Length: 135
Image (cartoon, rainbow, N blue to C red; front, side, top):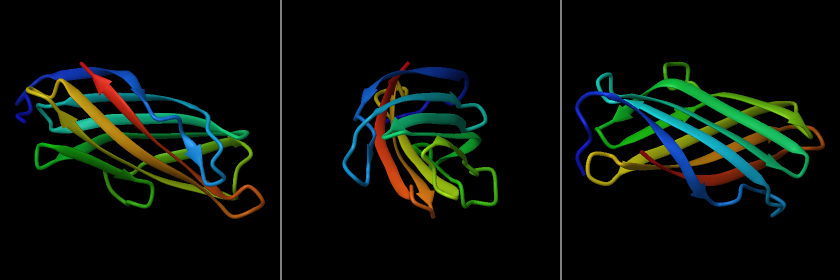
């Protein structure tokens, strides 16, 4: 697989798994991805709703690693920092990761997996899922 060496592309969400929490409840999600191949960065986001919890995670200027993948983490103190929020049935704090990569000639497709965690309190738990994209 070869990535473009220049240009900015917005990817369209094409589907994925239903997000699922640690109690095996499922819900719905939306996801966004844009790639700047000139700068070798992506902007990525997901909004997942499961069992009364609505969790969102976004990151900008996430480096494309070795011209194939990207990784954002809310615990990272640098450009890969992922902002995670929660409304509804939430824990006392929130963390998360998004990991993804490109597929196809010229990176015509992409995928990502995410794990969003509600920490502490009566509503602690994890929501995870997979999203696919195309140009």
